Length: 127
Image 1 (spheres, rainbow, N blue to C red):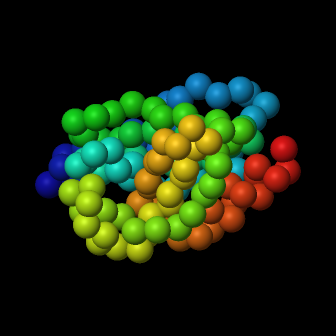
Image 2 (tube, one colour):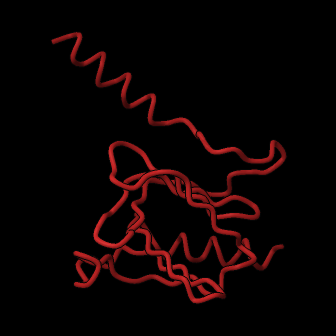
C-alpha cells in the first residue's frame, strides 16, 4: 500500500513542472489546470498566461498532445462560453473562448474563465 501511495505522489509531482521553453526574463502572469477542446477530444493540461503568449501544455495520456502557443498579438477576442460535448452540444459554462485575428478558435475548459478573459485582456492592453 505504501508503494502505491508513493508512486501516486511521484506521478503528481512529475506533472507539476513547466516543460515548454520560454525566455528567462518572461514572467508567468497566470496559470491553472485546463483542457483544450480539439475536435471530439478534451486534452487535459495546464494553461499559462505569459507576457507575450498564452501557452497550453498537455498532461497525461491524450490522443493529441504537445504544447500550443498563442501569441497575444494575434488574439482578436477573449470570451467566456460553454464547453461542448462531442464538439457540438453546449455542456458546461466553464469555457474560455479565444478567437484569433485569422478566425481560428481555441476553446479551453477551465476554472473561472471570466478571470482568465480579464487577465488576457489586461495583458494585451499593457503591451
